[in-house]
Image (tube, rainbow, N blue to C red; front, side, top):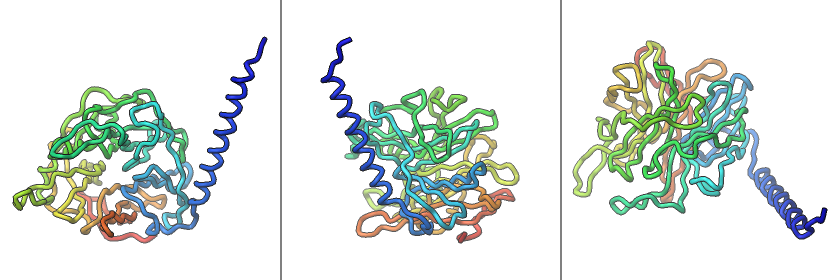
Length: 338
């Protein structure tokens, strides 16, 4: 057998190069890795906290695709890189990652997130050039990842910008993704649902409308003529049940320039609705994109980010609120300090 020394040399050089870059990346992660971080020292949009009883650990992710860990909600360490997307997919080699969530299901951990490929443009509406953006699901056998793609390369239509996908098992026993269809294209953002395959490796059928941004009685903005109109943004849905079994949904929009979170309740007790909006937001001004979890010591908590504009940039920090779900409605009791 005659060896192709040139090919061997090329493979060896490529291996050395990969090891070199891997060493650099590990060094960069170590450089930015921190321990004993207070929660309010972390800059993070759309925080999502998984209280994992198997490992007795909290795992927090959100926009940016990184992960933090904590044993007590007070001291955090990270960030860790936990996603391994396919560079040959529609996401491209370096997708933006927004609003990541961690969910447990059938002995695995699932990473629901919004991925954006800024090199692909799908539409232009009212002067807005729209990037290829969609909610998608990755999987891991461990809460700390790595999270990798499954079977279906696409969960939602390629010609629609979708975001903030979350997970729910409805009363029919089937798994669903609930997500936003972005206002940039439809000019009146919606929240929709789509059925997922039993192993969450893809979607089934088409998305169905749950409600529109304009259905909210509390979200407001000014149109081009200065008229008061409903805000067009839908953001961050999250499903829950109250102590009486009532199905509710957190979601976020705006009252003019104030970022706020409201609640809608399903009259049927299922995702199908109809969804009735509460008259007033449930969190203080400039807190939103919330989620609920039970702490390892059985406190019901809401994770949100605070929102502040600083020098034209968003300044967002994770915060916790204690909530009461024992009755017919979600009640926010106040800030929680671990």
